Length: 346
Ligand SMILES: [Zn+2]
Image (cartoon, rainbow, N blue to C red; front, side, top):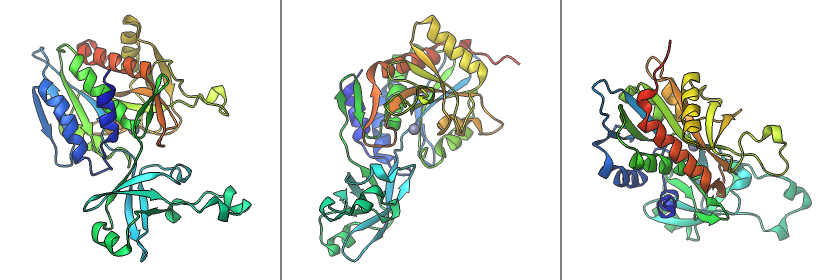
């Protein structure tokens, strides 16, 4: 496991629709092992390792490059920057955070907060709504006006660290999925099928890139790699934990964007059991992955998702267990390598 690569992936900005810089890193990693690498008009990246069978099918394994981010909505006369969300934010997680504003230059900034000395007990009970939050760039208004324009992307700032047995930082959703895809693609032996590792755009704003990618590629099977909610923390009852940390790779059955094909769920479970990869079944009441986009492409594609359990999702302290990451890489590798064994029964 390369912590350095995961850290680089987490640190490289990719607001939805602005994945260019990040895509270069994915390309750098996939190109040396791919038989061919291509990109579509909206920025999805496709790397293929050709299969050995004459009747090779197309298997699409997808992970999204974009992260939840912000966009400049308004700059006021004093040079404070107001923003719109790109993806699902809880405003409580934004207050007092550091950001990077990607203007004509990349600028450091912070999301301001009223000093506690000036807040009333009433104020402290309230959550500042997202439209009222602002960014301070530490620059005079005329300089801000020169460097920042409405529509510029903004990303959050937090370095990935090892924390006990976890990795903790921003954008593990879905950098750990992209990392898993790269590692499995590197480690797999040649499959019967053509294995496509697809790095997608614009997942966080409604699973848009994967739909376009799947339409273009027309795969026979689709597998998404993403994080899922580990709610095994104080204050949440056991029946609502969804999945637990260090309990294995999640084999998704359901979320609000997709129902995994039952035969694919069975196949993934069979592979995990055969090769003693620890796994857990996942039913997620909310949220979705690229599987939802692939499923709805063309005449419908059988899909599934392998998940990495993650605590504190969509915050700058997202946390995953390193053994769960390894288990997800291993089951993804097994799926890629043995995809030829999976045949849909009517
Ligand atoms: Zn995600």
